[in-house]
Amino acid sequence: MSGAWTVIAAVLSFAIAGLMGIRLVPFLRKLHFGQTIREEGPKWHKGKQGTPTMGGFMFIAASIAATVICVLLYHHMGERDGIPAESTLQSAKIYGGLFMAAAFGAIGFLDDYVKVAKKRNLGLTPVQKLALQFLAAIAYLVTMYFFGETTSTYIPFIGSVDIGIMYYPIAAVLIVGIVNAVNLTDGIDGLNGSVTMFAAIFMMLISSFTARMGLSIMSAALAGGCLGFLLWNFHPAKTFMGDTGSLFLGGYVCAVLFGLDREILLIPIGFVYIAEMFSVILQVTYFKLTKGKRLFKMSPIHHHFEMCGWSEVKIVVVFSLIEALCGAAALAMVIFDGGAAF
Image (cartoon, rainbow, N blue to C red; front, side, top):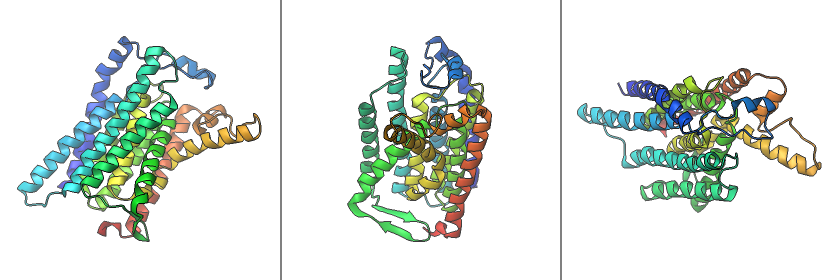
């Protein structure tokens, strides 16, 4: 019966996100919350100028609401049927994770609002964004510490490794890095939502296999919310998620994998995000070292393929398949490692 709550969470989140779009998209258009397209971006993206942004509110509201409702009902039904409730720490990981994701979403909202209010595509300064992001990450880590979280992380085929006090700065940098990598993945219609939907599906499977049902419900809610959002964001997009949505997604993915104590799985599950981030780093580094030459036609790397003639739909399909393969690899590592015992 416990597995049914993951399905319910996914369906509920999908319905909330999909139906929200009926009201939210016209509302954002009425407020003139339109996206400002980068001057250095692909020229054909200029046709997207003015498309409503901040559509990420769809999956933000949907995934949080579906998670809270289904987790509470799962615990209530479990108590009635004599199933032991999850520990206080596990509950803290769920709700603390949701708050961290929401905090990143709030930072993204501030960034989007500055862009919309000033009609420019810059938003908050890099220093402002990083400072707020590190505050959100540190607040989450401090909260987990007070609820009894250890400084150990689980590495497949090796076991639990305690890295002591160094866990905290490494974890903070990892969270902020992944959040910004997810943000860079948002650049063409349907890409970030599709990639994250597949990431969430495999996080759900891993959570179920390791008997972390609360986190499984949380992952399922994210998958459903992303699918509902894609009804409005798939090419041609009627709305964009904005930094409001992309930073929330990054925080959410980190919350689930940190909740599982399997932060190392951010490498396979976050492979697409990390590739996007490193394509930017490599492009900038190569440009400076060669005094103006480019390694890619454009970065992040999805724009490189776009400049090579790939359609937006083709890029979304290929990147989603890569994400699915990487997610399957992460799941296989957990299964063959016997991770359910941890």
